View 1 (cartoon, rainbow, N blue to C red):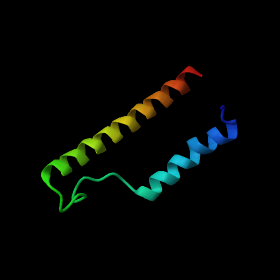
View 2 (cartoon, rainbow, N blue to C red):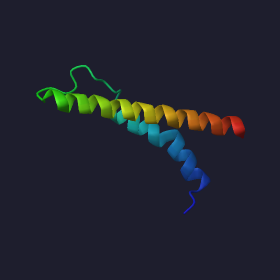
View 3 (cartoon, rainbow, N blue to C red):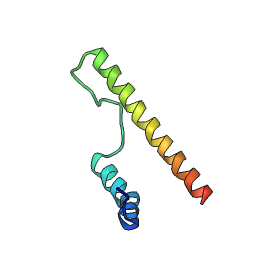
View 4 (cartoon, rainbow, N blue to C red):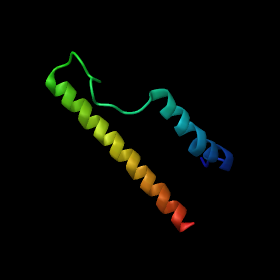
Length: 68
């Protein structure tokens, strides 16, 4: 189902901003305490994957803007 232009604009403009403002910046220092070493390493790998995904999304949006 296709999104309306307004819904797409709203999501691109406000949804991501609201989400980021609620969760705050990604941090690794003292973020996982009381866990074993493997759990901390998995958490760091997950954080790195999320950052990589965000960067890929930014690049995709940049390419879309340069094409249009």
